[in-house]
Image (cartoon, rainbow, N blue to C red; front, side, top):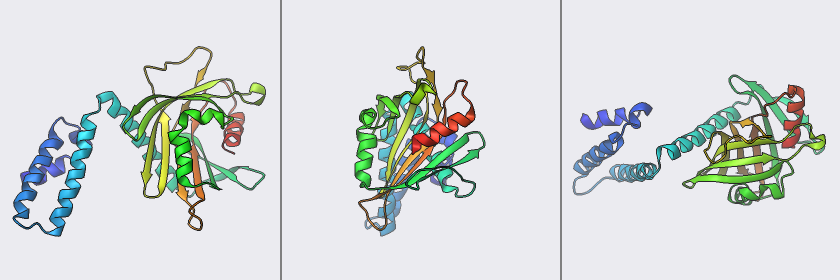
Length: 262
């Protein structure tokens, strides 16, 4: 009974974060598994042992992070989950822009977030190539993206999470002045699908800069999935949610954002 109570307890977020509770629960669970297994463990016992070992290594990894680092990890995972939920809703999207080649930018207004934009296209690139460019070579984004002046990684936490500072390039006619963003980004792979999600955060290394408006974004997400007919092509989905701040009419902002995606 005590083991089951521990399992039930750690399923609640506020209890899962209590110091030492998960570790004690794991010790109790391992003890029970060893008792149940006896001299010849059955297949299901082996499976549970393997899964509990994975959980144990995840907890050990978390324990290496500081409270600030764990905060960024959770922010990134939260941004990813919110973005996946938004992209999973197929209803309510309206056409915002149609490019010359037929690519469309869709939009919808969401409570507590505002207007979000979605672009879905097929790219003539392998998902791994795109992932390496967008994640592995993130700081070189300004070399090929005309909308980005500079991207700098302020802090990396483990394999999946980083905090970045991004400075936008000037728009034609300087309709929208200089903007910068401080974002936490979460890069994940689930099978053959790659995700890069993000949202605004704060970081001690990059306070607001004089003469530059600090925009806010999130949740944003790029999803890269191999094409079913040709795995060397990628179904590329980009969810964009950003508040450029400043005294700019929404009609101009919406036009700039949808054109940015195209």
